[in-house]
Length: 443
Image (cartoon, rainbow, N blue to C red):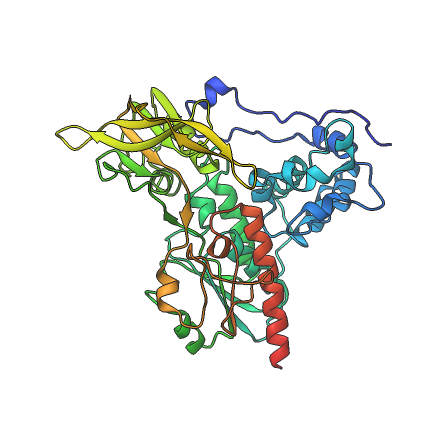
């Protein structure tokens, strides 16, 4: 019998005062009892709209029905039939904008907590002492190269391996996971979780070559010469954008990429690592997206007394950076901001911010973090003929990841610019389907 409770089961989490001083995961996860109770809120609709909101087409009502029965192993099998990274998705997907936004229970009351249930099932499986051996599909004899081990590359690799392809991922960093390991903080996505998901793919037979910078150590052309029949480019958007204002070269100015990479990948927050990191006092974070919020929370956890968000559209007050000031020693002493007001609506109804003349003021800070977006690294663009690119440097590809060059496919942030993990995974899934069709068409 369905549980008609209007609200979701709450997610247990660390107290805000406590978590401000550590890098442990904030959300603690459902108990088995809470998961079963939440799963029983599902109406098991005849035409489930929730699945239409999932970029990787998880069979949502089916896995939830198994959770309601207490058959968590069956639920895991259902999820992983379409999703290679369930523990990741259960933590960082914006379910409220996707599957949960389509949930019929959300018309009156709150939608079913689909993301929390996915996380519970994935964690249950990960924490089992005895697991069934991962099946490595028999090889079909075709070799595929994947550039980048972020969410797009990992998903593409998992789907192709399930179809029997021999898949090799080439990753520039010494650790695999892409933005999952260098961009998202430990307290939102523990790196042990990412490592376990990757180990599952490797157990299936996916090969990963680290410290391999495609476009430098080996080009896309050379991958074909080495016998790969198709290449999927999922190299992400790791090139930080800057403000191009005076003072950006002062000591104490970070791109969010550098700050987060030092902390997340290189463990600068831990005493047993030698990664250097500035000890913050007053920090200005420029930007207002997910990365800016992650940077602000990281700075606070590293001991900052005050963290300010400075943004040129609307965040409390309209303020836009115009210069960064420093002392004679070359260190940051403040950030100069100009107050703004919203102008007249344009043809789309958007009111653009306009600077208020004479309103410049200086916010005293010792650190500035620039978090205004990223773009794809130009390395592949500069070393690969036959591809076409957007003005912002993204590879031009259709919805299936097909590019202008035969045998080369692309997806994720390398195509769209900075976006969400789940959209990158959806692109990896589409790329795998297109590669499979391409290889079969050549037979």
